[in-house]
Length: 256
Image 1: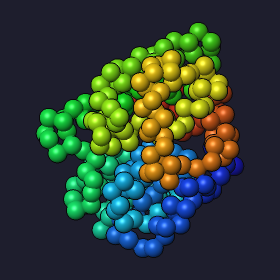
Image 2: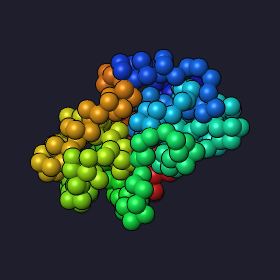
Image 3: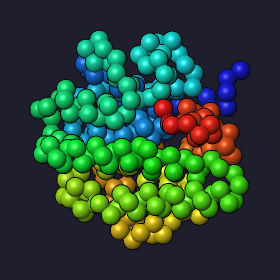
């Protein structure tokens, strides 16, 4: 018998389902994704923003199927096959798309080397501070620890927000920094409904920014219905989820 986490609605829905349907023809780039996974959505948004041809392949990473484990030994989405080579890790894939498809625009990393370095600094902040904060808030059970986690999340958001040029992180141009936080923005309804989080309590600027990001076409077109996410996030809220991210938070480790 498999773990409860295996019982995931099997397909993307809403606008995401239409996007999947457009990407079933064979391509040099095969994109292995899970409609429910925020890490996979980062890479998916990047592909959509740049108009790169890809074939979408839905994966349930909890089933650990041999073919997929041969592509990503961690058994995690996202992953890609490109010209016979397998690659994985969401932000690494986003940068790979920049390098492997230079003729597809827009670029999602700044061309200026200083701004490109700054982008990586803030990607590091999102990876090491923002995402762990929101996952801790999801999973901790004691009220006092939830209150502490909420303040940690707000602090992480404010640090990021103080550096947003507006309307997007680097100004008018949507970038990989925006993509890196977008999937958690569209899922923050979970901590709003269950953990007392409010965008405006982080800052009015964050609320404005989050509302802009979640309406971006590439974000909308890679998002599925909330109703199929309720069971998934219920396991996080009860601290029963068995994803690698959930297990890392539970053990006080870095999210892999």
